[in-house]
Image 1 (cartoon, rainbow, N blue to C red):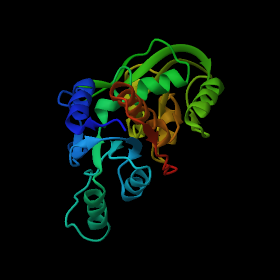
Image 2: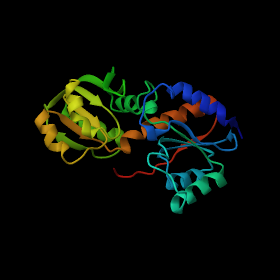
Image 3: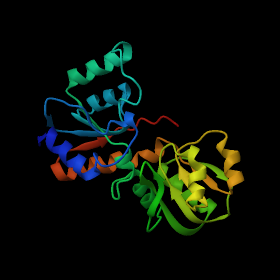
Image 4: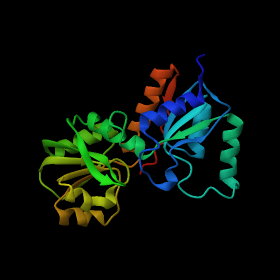
Amino acid sequence: MPTTALHDIVRYSDRLLRTEEVNDYGGAVNGLQVENRGTVTRIAAAVDASLSTIQLAIAARADLLIVHHGLFWSPRQPWTGKTCEMFRLLMDSDLAIYSSHLPLDLHPKLGNNVQLCTAMGLKNPKPFFYDKEQHIGLQVRAKLSLEEVKQRLKIAVGGEPLVIPGGPAICRRIGIVTGGAGNELKRAVAEGVDTFITGEGAHWTYALAEELGLNVLYGGHYATETFGVKALARDLSQRFGLPWSFLDYPTGL
């Protein structure tokens, strides 16, 4: 069975994703969040780190779990109840967790945004959506009907997107920011797109999209962010010769 040192995988991943250079939310805690005894034989990937996905990783006999949303978005103290159960399980199973949020969103090859563009057949993406002193999304020029964009997104994420038809029938500038950018419709319009694809948004964004003249497609926060962890785990598998699997645990959100 092939074995790789955990620190070799972490060092490679941090360099590949520019973990120290990309600005992010404080709770993201990008990089190695939980270490194990130092070796990796099997990699699992999941969108979220949670008790449920940790249990799935253990069942898959993984000793490294790659995630997009890590453990520390909200305070994890005191270590009681389910939190205690989760950390005890991590220690007992010798499972390491590596998390990458915005570094994985915006990566030019492995990122959620570029991977979704590719899955939708959208060509020549350019930087879009300036946030935290960097572009975290992508935009493309196209000439596609809104219905065609919807169908392509549906196939890419494997589910029916919610569509707000607030803009033109023909989409010419399409912006993509995977995850939860639905509250930033004004920023999308300010950067010149007529169609905005993201994961989710609040109820009030429907009326705002109509007022702004913007088409909005919500493909699901979870569904639009399965791409990056798969791509990263696949890359690590190829580089280090380790088996990997994707742990699908959809939230429906």
